[in-house]
Image (cartoon, rainbow, N blue to C red; front, side, top):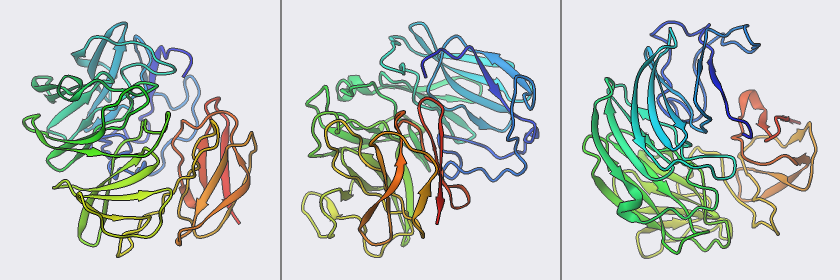
Length: 359
């Protein structure tokens, strides 16, 4: 985002009731970007379907989260980073709490990129310079952590941008880096009540140059009676036992599963039994071209837009990939794709929309 956002515009026309669905963290209640609300507005102008506007001092890459009649958002103002609580119906600021200083711009983002999370009782916020704090809904601070002080400076080329994952009684925080540090990447589990570390597991990678860095957010995978925390980045996808430090790994270069020492249970694209999850694969980049995205689909799509040589790959149920002709993007690869009603959609950095149709 090249220009500072001077105001935030939240649409509440179809969800004005406090009983509307909550949006407690990045990617929503199901951690998949899907809302169960019906008849949501699909058109906006300066006035149409806009309930209110709240001016903000600067931009932020964080997603506002919603619980009941309250909105929580990370806000940057010059060197300061703070958490705001806003009345969802009136747009009035209920309270502001200081998170950290030391905000600075790096590329297109600043230190306000991680999204807050809430369980409806407390709210938790993280900054791009490693400060993590817990508050109750009245804004009283419960605990505070400095992840960089505890485990070393972040070493990402474009600054830290991952959001915490809130699952059951813990926060899961990933730090995948390597471009500007020799410290290992890791996944951290923090007790949400006390802020204390439950465990920290290092996440090895053979990725080089900028590829060890990742700005993704962990997700939850349930299959076969198991629950895993899935982390994507560093040229591989790993599955971590939600309660322990066991690790499952899927790498771009090896498709057959087998047991390994050192805590890893398998290494490959699919565990056994195969989980009901879209397959994820990555292609080794050539030069400075980004890795290819791979999604499990029932039919090969066709693309409605073209650009430069950045291809989209789609992955079927078996471990093989296919290039979709013409599915390219010359405007960047920062947006999160969506898959509504059988279509794969994504938006480019310059605002151009791509829609891939099955057929």
